[in-house]
Amino acid sequence: MKIIDMRSDTVTRPTPEMRRAMAEAPVGDDVYGDDPTVNQLEALGAQTLGKEAAVFVPSGVMGNQVSIMAWTSPGDEIILGANCHIVQHEAGAAGRLSGVNYAPVANPDDKIYPADVHRLVRPDDIHCPRTSLVCLENALGNGDVVSAAQMAETYRAAKEHGLPVHLDGARLFNAACALKVEARELAASADSVSLCLSKGLCSPVGALICGPKDFIAKARRCRKLIGGGMRQAGILAACGLISLTKMAARLKDDHDNAQYLGARLAEMAFLKVDADRIKINMVYWQPADPAFDASGLADYFKERGILINPADNGYFRLVTHNDVNRDDIDRLVAELKKFMG
Ligand SMILES: Cc1ncc(COP(=O)(O)O)c(C=O)c1O
Image (cartoon, rainbow, N blue to C red):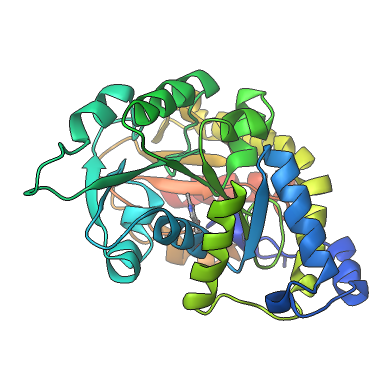
């Protein structure tokens, strides 16, 4: 029986083409700058996002943390969403590794608006930490996307205060696909961008930080400092090249499957799904009856070869990706009916 894994798009396996590319990749020692495949990936990443340079890092978390470290000094404060990945899911790394404080923005939609930036930038006062960075996220962890126009407004606000902007673009291509724009249009409203290759783009490992040359030089040093310098990393970068050249273009299939799943769920009276909220490959739903005990659902599914995460704040999240097709979705829906019905 096929295991259907809808916990996240991080579970995607490298494609057969990626496995072949790994076997054949020309490699060298990347810490010496000698790995031709890594160099090719970094050049392509920078070009794709319209930035001067890029550096390959092992994970999205490292992409964000190296960027924060490169933009800030210990004791600084950074403005970012209260629910963003950096705050909620990176083990407090920004405090521990870079010694920065958070100025969190807690809007109900998880977006950051110009007024938030203006309100939170600290005055030039010896009592205050120095505000040194604004971090945006797109796509957002809640499955929503931020339009290019909205990003540009917030970027302009940051620039009025002379602040750099980092974009956690773990799913930047999903956002671009949903908004029907090029990823570089969204990246234009950030100085640095961290882009994950190992989510919907199917690479087994890796992320790219893209940005100005001098910043990327600093980021390379920070990457080394936290042990992220890799040697024959071309084995991994070979997959990254396929992620950028082929897999980004197929994310629409995942989004269409998420819409299909949303429509199937919407047929069921015993649960609530806000189909308008489905923008990328994530579908959030909750039982219609708040008293219904769905705490056993993840275990029930697991016994039937379907993997999901337990509900978070009352919501279940299902994520479509390259290893999930419509038959899988139908199987999940049928099992869900049995459990809830
Ligand atoms: C928005 C966002 N940023 C960063 C990351 C970090 O990626 P990783 O856990 O692969 O390092 C994730 C992971 O899911 C994410 O969703």
